[in-house]
Image (cartoon, one colour):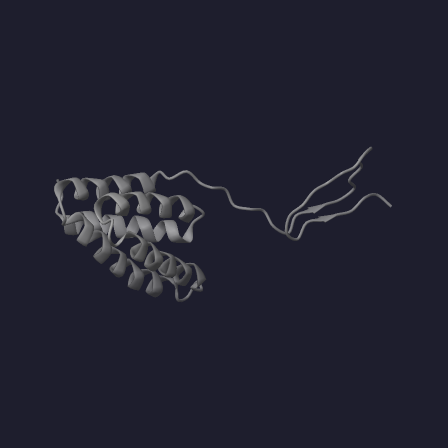
Length: 138
């Protein structure tokens, strides 16, 4: 088995990567399960910190993203390093989280700014969503 520092470094990278993708909701729930089992007294506080980190990382522009992600990755590594250091079982759970997030199911990206042209409907045609534009033949 790797050291808790190595396990935490991999977990930090996996969690930060999930923050910019469309899997954050899934990753957050998996972090919550891990924290609930191995750091129950700190779980809610840590999840609130992770949510704040996610908002900052996701809001970073392309030029500032590498620096912002690296800064928050160090903080996430500290969090999961402390959890992994609690016990062998906790270290295994953090390592499993890393593997799980590498293969996390995509939640799908919502399509926006969709345009449909020349739509013909014999009956009611109902479509909803942000920035959806539908036009028919004229």
